[in-house]
Length: 321
Image (cartoon, rainbow, N blue to C red; front, side, top):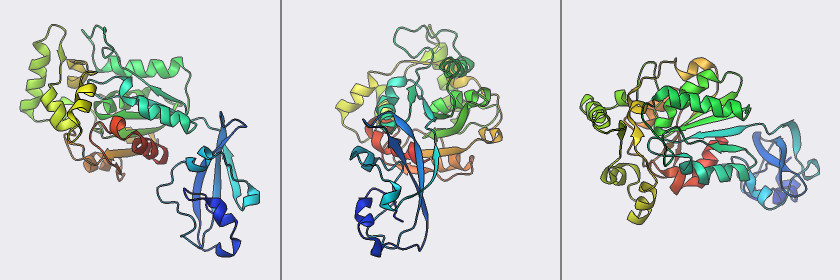
């Protein structure tokens, strides 16, 4: 048997004398129809490899390399197909503060190319022209729930980026039977009764509240200097300006309302934590948030805006989480 990874497995299949059963690995790939789409299902292959120089599974998440090559391995190539499961996972992507679904679009397109439906949501008040007055955290939670139910989604992988983890966690508690996994991407992992503002110093929390109260619509705008230095540092200023110009003021109560639900771990769902290595925007180290899940963070390159600057890495992390 041979392992299917990012190096050509057909090479290993051509040299059975260099392949022996000295260990096992589990890898998966998407089996495609005659034209490459749509995906028919995920095939799990159990393998054993003697020569690591032939095949390398490290970093292999969805093994999309040979799908792109138009080559689907079969049992005659030395693969033992042990299970076939329907492709019923849908990624529902929740953006962080000041952002809309547009911030997830590069990742969503890549997830679809790998065979997964993906929906990038924009929360109320964060579409250009919205009226954000009166919006609170529960409005964001309700929007996610309504979108998932309206689309009749099941097998949902719910992904929250940054502040988006708060409404995502709240929605997970209300979508029993529809959510299969919750993933936190460079995000807080909320504890009961806390808000985003509770994660920062009392001085900064009071500044945020007073800022929202001082505007007619009770929103908070993000200054460019803060965005440049904390959320997208080390990127060219032209790129920073392009992203910054898409941001909208955040409804103040999105940040100050507490999330009054139990820890996500009480739901009995699989969870994962992805951390951009150069993220300076988190109020605590990402590893501390991941520890709340009992997990080690999956590290990827990039800043807080890695979904835009490193979408390939974010997509691979999501597929392997």
